[in-house]
Amino acid sequence: MKTLKPAALAAAFLLGSLLCTNAWGSPAEADAYARLPVCKLSADGKGLAVEPCRTAPAAVPMPRRPVPLTPQPMPRNQTAPQVAMPRAQPSIPIETLMHPPGTPMPAIGCSAGGCYDPSGGRHNTGPAGTTITPAGKLCHKNGAWLQC
Image (cartoon, rainbow, N blue to C red):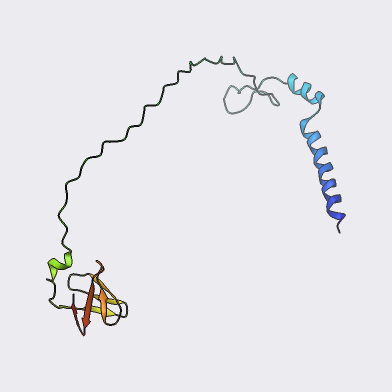
């Protein structure tokens, strides 16, 4: 079994070598191809005038046009100057605007994961009867009411 693989590979290599040798053709075939007339279209333009024929050589090789190389230096990168930003007033959480601190609000659509408040904010279930607002504030859950 161990000698079968190398023998099969050697046979495949030899067979491939023979096929490649025949694919390149011999010098006699190259001479016969050179004697064929150049391919041209027939008068109706739907086929070749003479078959077999050989492909036409390039009419006139185009001379290469020299293009001057003029490298341009890259512009220097400069950082933008730092602008002092005006101090912003601290923002008021939306929860404070909707429900003033300390006033209870109804808990809507409660599940094991938490409840919703009347403004649509999700209160996730927290430790021991509390919920956590989206801003991270703890609220106490008392039956159907939330108090933050």
